Image (cartoon, rainbow, N blue to C red; front, side):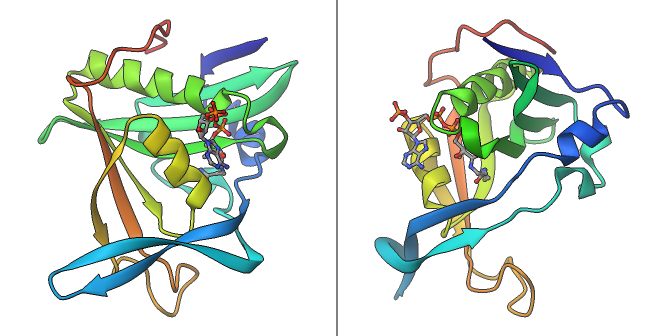
Length: 188
Ligand SMILES: CC(C)(COP(=O)(O)OP(=O)(O)OC[C@H]1O[C@@H](n2cnc3c(N)ncnc32)[C@H](O)[C@@H]1OP(=O)(O)O)[C@@H](O)C(=O)NCCC(=O)NCCS
C-alpha cells in the first residue's frame, strides 16, 4: 500500500537524502532554433543518456517549502515531492518530484502530483508550474500525460561550463480551473 505523509524536518533529512534522483533515457527532445521560435524534436540518443539531480537535501530552500510530501511503500521511501506557493502571481511551483527507480511506472509520481495539486488548490493557486530539461524525456511525457502544457523555454538558464551544459530549461503549466481536482486527501 502507498502512504503519503508530510515530511518532518530534521527527522526525515537522512531518508530524503537517500533517494536516487537519477534517470536514464534513450530519447530526448532536441531544441531547434527557428527564426522567431523553437521546435522540440524527439530524437534517439545512443548510448542512453544519464542525469543525476543529486541530493534533494542540498536545496537550501527545502526547509521553507510549505508542501513537502513523502510517499512510502512497505516501510521504504518510494518518492518525494515539494511545492511552494507564490502569492504575487498565484502560481504553485513544483520544486521537486522524484520516484525511487524501482517504483517508477507504478503510479507513485501521479499520486505525489495529486497531492501537490490539492495543496495548490487549497492555497488559492490558479496553476501548477514547473521546470524540467529537454533531455528529461520520461518526465516530459509524464507531465504531458498529467495535463501539463509547454509554456516556455530558456536556453540560457544553465551555465555552459556547468553540469547543465547542453540542456535547455523547459517550463510546463497545468491550469487548475481547467483540470479536474484529484480525489486526494489533503495533507496540508
Ligand atoms: C518522472 C517521474 C517522477 C514519473 O513518476 P512515475 O511514478 O514513474 O510515473 P507514473 O507511474 O505515475 O506514470 C504516469 C504516466 O506518466 C507517463 N510516464 C511515466 N514514465 C514514463 C516514461 N519513462 N516514458 C514515457 N511516459 C512515462 C505514462 O503515461 C504513465 O501512465 P501509464 O503508466 O498509464 O502509461 C519518475 O520517472 C522519476 O522520478 N524520474 C526521475 C526523476 C525526475 O526526472 N524527476 C522529474 C524532475 S523535473
